[in-house]
Image (cartoon, rainbow, N blue to C red; front, top):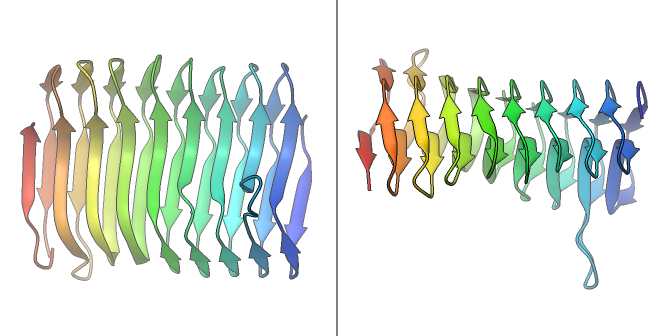
Length: 232
């Protein structure tokens, strides 16, 4: 599935998939939501995917949310295979479902990005992966408001060179990398600047166990932080 485009200007839907493949690649697809409502029903949850594959590579897909009420999960790209270089951007509207730049249950998650410039969001993951490498993913927040946000989320695998960039907005908790197992986290960068963004808590790396090396936090003009780097 390659080069497909969906644009929603209004109305109601449960699910949107820019590009779908059972086992092959899903690349260069896009979904744009200008307005409307995405909802779950009592039987099955809805979702939005820029690109989806059961096992194949998913890369360079884009989801843009410019308005509307999004009550479902949003994925730039999702697969059991490699997921790379997908982007989700939110500039307006409300997203109550979780947002994933890239998600893989069994392979690498590399180079995915989330940009929050406005609107209201819940929980945000630029990259989530439980098996392979989770590297070079970016969380960029320059406006809007939200709850929990992560550049990378892993278990017993490894994460390298993931980046948080914050220049505006208001969030409850932003974490560079969350490691729920005993993997390895290296070279995380967490940078805050701009016009006094608001964070209740800024965390470079939070780990249950494992190894954490070379974490950098650069904080300026940050309003009311509890800034910390820790293994817990």
